[in-house]
Length: 209
Image (cartoon, rainbow, N blue to C red; front, side, top):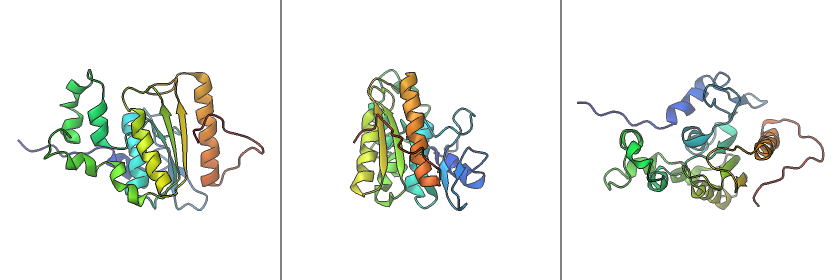
């Protein structure tokens, strides 16, 4: 029986290179770089979100830092190793036929190196793309520590990072006020890096310092 090749999110990033508009990317004015706004459940013009999408966004800005003008990560995984160790107990039985199969089991010393090598945090030394990170403070699936560690890595290198945390949200936002704030903040963030225009005197409340 042949081994199943391990692939996690990297093909999604490659798709954005070959057909950026089709995959929901936004092109910079000079036509040379893109902000990765990949489709989420086939809906275009929604930035990358959740376990797969947010991780793909972070892969893009760490593994291919010269390609993207900016990126938005919504509750994404920064380390496959720490993610797989902190998922809720009721999720762990499903990891055997899913994440362990395609990413590797970090509890196995022989396999741990592979998920680490596929983790955005392992490429922290290459970070230079401006990033916005959105996180729910009560997220049980992708815990806040996943976002904290990639934000810390960006700030340690002096790279701009916008960090929006809503303590009363979990894995995905359900509060309308929080959702509006998230879209407003992302709009301003992307406008700065893609040549858009921000309303004069406008502010983006709710960001962490």
